[in-house]
Image (tube, rainbow, N blue to C red; front, side):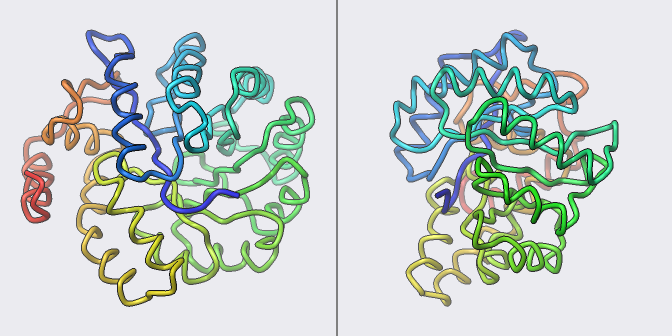
Length: 291
C-alpha cells in the first residue's frame, strides 16, 4: 500500500549530463526528511528528455541508493505500449517496488485503448502499477468507469489523479477505492483528496519541503483535522508557486536557490524562468522563510 507524501524527484543535470552524485544526495535528503516514497523519471524528473539508457540508469541508481528503505515507484510510462513494457520490465529487473504509468500522450487513445494499454503492461511485466491520469499533459482523460475496469487488474495498486477535478476523484474512489489507493497528483489538492478517502500525494513540493508535506498526511491519518488544515494552508502558497511556470522549472529553480542542487540546469525545451516569475517564486520562498 502506498500512502503519505511520495516525492516526484527531479533529475539534476551537470553540463548536459545526469548528475549522479547530486541525485544520490537528493535521495538521502528525502529519506532523512521523512519522505514516504521515491518516484524517479516522472514528468518532474524530465523523463521526456531522458534517453532510454539514461532513464534506465536513473531508475537503477534510485533502487540502489534507496536500498529498500522506502518504496521506489519508477516512472516507466510511454505513449508507446511496447516502450512502456520495455522500461517497466527493466524497472522490475533492477528491483523497483512499483511503476508509475502515465496515460499515453499525444496519440489520444480511446477509453478501450487506454484499458488495453495498461492491461498489456500489467500482463507482460507483472510489476505493481500506479496509473497516472493527467489530461492537461496527455490530452486524454481516464474516465471513472474506465479507471474502475483498470483497477480490476491485479497488478494495479494505486492511481495518481491529477485531473484537478475533485468530483471525478470522488467518483473514482466510490467505484474502486476498495481495490486501489488514490493519490493526489497535485500538491494543492492533497487535503481535499484525503478528505474523500485518498491516501496521500506524489508531490512536486516534496523536493523542497519533504517533511512539511509529509506532516500534512500524518496529521490527517492521526485524525487531527485542524492540524492537517493548518499545515496544508501554510504550504499552499508554495504549492502554487511550483506551477508559476511549467513543472519542473520552478521547483528546480527553488532547489537551486535553497542550495539543494548545485545547478538548476534544465534540458530544452525547458528553459530558465522569466524574470518576473522568478521574482514571484523568490517572494513565495521568502514569505515561507526558506530564502
